[in-house]
Image (cartoon, rainbow, N blue to C red; front, side, top):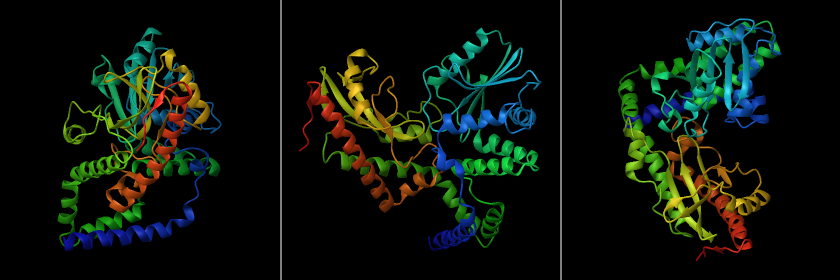
Length: 407
């Protein structure tokens, strides 16, 4: 253990040195204007702007041709190739006379019911003979069975921001060598991708790490970490939920419905099939229209979030039913920037800062392994959740319902 600690200390020194060297390059316009995980308004928009042959980048079809090369699909870019964003809910669509590339762009958003299947049927129905379904994520993971519907996984090409988008951006940067403004914009966007994918080390820093690992038995110590990484992830998430449950139970009784468990976590981290990431902590905050109004803190395939869900006789209800319109209207009027109403959710928010146990690569998530950091993160979010509950319970009472008493 002393040898392992010594290795970690030396790695920390390398990280500190390069952090200091890079302090002058910290300015980046993208995080100032958008949330870096905003897949629609940042990433899909940026990809669309670069892929458009007539875009303001002035590179014609060069960027698009390089992108198709990276995808390694049978598609010929011509002057008549069209690019669409949010075409009938498809994030990005590249099409010519007989061929189409359908891109579903996922940063941390959840898969939707039969999403990929519906897009395939839609484009097939428009007469395209060759359809390439692309599922773009940070790490190249598979779409859920929910999203695939009846489509076989083999019909979907998996790509990632780390494996395909980053090399493509490198090519675009090279092509933009004579356009400083465009080149620097691409470099800044690439840094956002590096941040999201946990790939922030420079080549010089990587070489120093390699040199350090090649000394003595450091490689054996590093392998010890690598061999136990999945266990580190499992226990980090387990500690997160157990510590959060302690906070929740000071005010509310946790329900068994979709509650986290050892089996849930093991399905995510150890099973190749039958994964069940939709779990968390649910508790009743009141009653409205003969239905239990619950606050649910959930772990999906990506980010963690919390919000209002309705439970009746042990089943979650479809909250877009008209009977919940008045309650939804109240929440909309009193909660700022709440996410839009969905099939099983009324108002809802992401935990802040964002954490993603699935990717387990960003600093916010990794630091949850540290007890003090985890406790502060949970305390800060619990305060915001309690404020949310106060508003939600006011709405319940104003509409003739009864709020769950807090002892």
